[in-house]
Image (cartoon, rainbow, N blue to C red; front, side, top):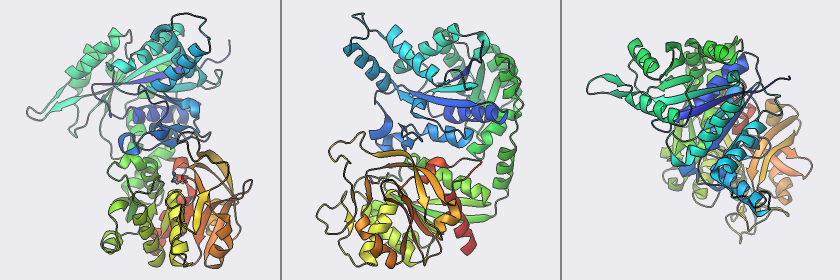
Length: 534
Ligand code: GLN
């Protein structure tokens, strides 16, 4: 028999938001560092078909995979941790599953059978999980089930993973349950009852967790008798109970799990011999502890009330900070409230200014002001997607003198649409019309971009509008250089201001390719430039 992929399922108990994604990614990191190939998948029990059109304020950022999947932000953690490009297969929602099953039904695929949650929905879920194994090429697939055990909508997912367990050899599946270990301040005691209840709930679905991560949100040390109590009452050995304490950084979690020998439990239960080597992670942790430079970056966006809307951007800054021995402080600036009158007070303390991606006219003028402030005051600027379009609009208005310059996304009457829709992009439909996923940028010789990337950059996109090529010469002669292009369709990918310490903006999203072990070149260059002039 050939190789058979092993599956690790991550479920959550007691409350949501415990960091199941980080726990799963950390396990993935440990496996990867032991030389295993790892693929990850997130299943979300909500009914939206994909997160593409979900409000970032409610749901956090939309993470884009190399193949153009618009996915849940947890995939960003997965990729930053395990350093593997995931795909559209890595994320699906209940909405997508039901949609596919109903479409199959309409096409007559079920030949008149009654279509039901079990077996039709569960079989579809199982098919999606098996698809991750790439015909058993991958050593481990880690599947995170969103939500909390006991939720009505997650039941078909739990049933599907139970069935997988019953179909595969014992050593090929492992269940990790991440549940909240509560602490009562009044009595100063840890309480294990909610964990017991959530394991009981798992058992009622026919699943005994193999490992329990007791996630504890207080800084008091968890006494050994609590671990014993959990293990005793949840049918586990003490070494199968892992304490998930708050760490200084999420990038310390693989080290914390490794210290508690989670790899030995996995090795034994899954019949493998894991010898993890977390060298990069130890080095990053040490560097972080000893970082001396303090860097303040103003992130000017409209969703700053929910910082998860910019999760990959802030993690990319942190990762570049770690390797450049810098402690990054993000100054969250609401672009809707930024005006010519308050800009000095809001931005004067910034070592760098970053305008991230965004959609819609709301808050755009505040971002234009921020780009202008960075340009004039020679403060390092990194523009991402909308942040690049904004930089071009600002330059066209205030350097080229086209006072009404704009993007056709915001002003259809402008005579100077320096950013516009190009033919073939559909104006009327919201879903599915974006330029999505990975494209290769050819870098122009002699530019700052070349110093950072070399001759090409492969980065991910998620946008509809493009730089208007009619203005290229005018921009270049006035000092804004086109430093990267997508050759095939002659699209501008990177612009930079020559006479400036660091003013670079890209039409793509560099934040989606940062890895703990490999910071993205644009973010790295941005932080290095800041440190060099500080
Ligand atoms: N709204 C702009 C566009 O569609 C920018 C998108 C983005 O920043 N992701 O082109």
